Image (cartoon, rainbow, N blue to C red; front, side, top):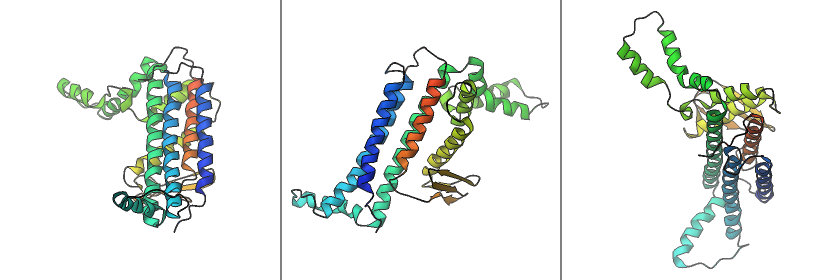
Length: 272
């Protein structure tokens, strides 16, 4: 059986992370309804739900060991016994662990994508946004250069390949444009943060295929934990537990904060 001895200490650490997120949100010099501030409310909620999931494991472990006594009825007793199995059976524990790890990764990345999209929509110049929206179409036209294209076909290509909103544009391309815009004011190392975001995106994407990775082989080390992505194989890491996923989210939050404060845009950027 996998040891759960580390959980209580980790619960305290997650609570400290929640306080750090509050502090980061309070330090952002924008209105509470500005996306640059609201992002930290979204991240707080994600980490808080993760915290509750980890506490749940510790609670059912204590109930199973009769450290916590609860009044049981014939109906509810069966359900409580099923919950206790999570802290007893390795496969059930792994399934619960993977479920809340999956949730913190996907939900935090969704918050980050939303924040970056809204920032891009307000901070980037119109010609830059047009370039992002039209990039796929322009590549196709360049590939067909010299070939006669009927006007009707051209219209169809425009409708199909020109994006109608930045939300449909790759997060990496939006980040590239923002990093280029703020490079002189950015307080962190752009290349290192781009690599972290590449890793985070790959990790999040392979969760949609039950941890199976599809793509070019890739490896990344974060705070001593090595992640290995091999084509058509499950993503592997030195640890698969509760001890590092909140750390990933904290780093994502630090990057967003650095981007937000580096953007020279004093007007409010409303949270949609």
